[in-house]
Amino acid sequence: MRLLPDRPSIEFLRKEAKDLLAVLRESTPGTSLAEAQRVLAGEYGERDWPALKAEVERRAGDTPTAPAGLAEELAAVFGLGKVTAPARPVTFTAMGRCWDITTDRGRWLAVTVYHWITNEQAEVGARLRDAATAAGLAAPVPARSPYGRLVESVRGENWRVHEWLEVGPSPVLPVSTDLARRAGAVFGTLHGLAIPSEEPIQWYLTHRRSPDEWQELLGRARAADKPWAERLEAFLPTVDELREIELETPSRLMLCNRNLIPTHVRQGRDGEFVAMEWDFAGSLTPELELGAALTQWVLRPDLNVKALQAFQDGYGGVREWPRLDMGAFAVAISGWLNWAYNAFCEAIDPETADSAVFAEREAVGVLDRPMTCKGLEQLLV
Image (cartoon, rainbow, N blue to C red; front, top):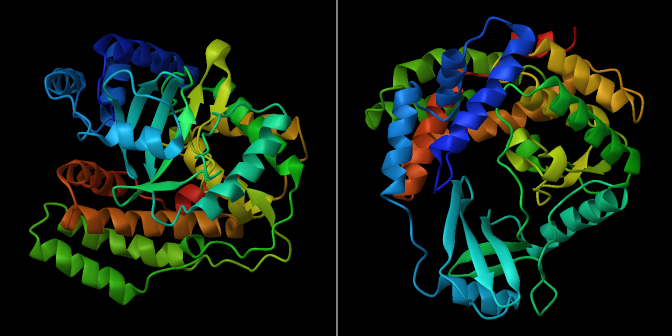
């Protein structure tokens, strides 16, 4: 589910709708602007364009404010200088809210990260990011604390800080053929680095919850009177079908970004492709990362055949496209099932009001657009 920023602009959404219109007309020339606006509203979790406009107006009068002293604490911990303006909210994500902080040394983006993204994990991502930027890819410049750390704990949460980078929003879905081609080239460049990795694939990308755990989740949804509980029950056979595609342990692994998805990409000046997120980096094979990437870049909201070909062409312009089979989607399946399970859990028992809204939309989004074996098979044609 696409998320509105904390200070959305209806004019910018109109531009997004026009950009989306151009993409939709690549496959359906007769698409109208009204249809593009409706599709965009759906991406933001709203039923139609008027509902999206109403949500923008609501947010304009309900802009979050930073907790007292948070900006100053972050500036002190990361050595950013003296805060010269109130922190401004940027957006809420699954990891928490991002803040725009201005000091006498510059402008910064402060983001909360998952508890498992420790400084050691961030250093793994920094290794890949440094090699990628040396190869010509664009990424934000991270800030290190006076102790040389990329991750610091502030108020019980793990934080990262980047130098502020003037970029646009993440791409709307479906992506254009041009962007899909550039994404493929970026993956080709990253795989061409071929940085060996001895660490095993992260458990989140290999672990599958048992049928009993999913049944227990269904019981919790019913006990919480969730309106989507019966849809969750109808979804469980799809879970069982996906579980049948198992991961064959690879013999050789390389360091991969592992989460280079449209949500984590921005377009910089002159349409430059900027990869914003590197903290999820770790071991994979090119085949497994491409299997996961295709589900994000060309299978949402539906199969985009032209974007699939463009993605493969972009990759093939850098290095040879590997042969993929259903096994290439194994980590994509594990990651998606775990993400879906956690979204349902958070929707049933949210930690905060912000996470409640986010998780409820994510849970409904899972049921509206589930991953299926039939959909994955289309990517191999």
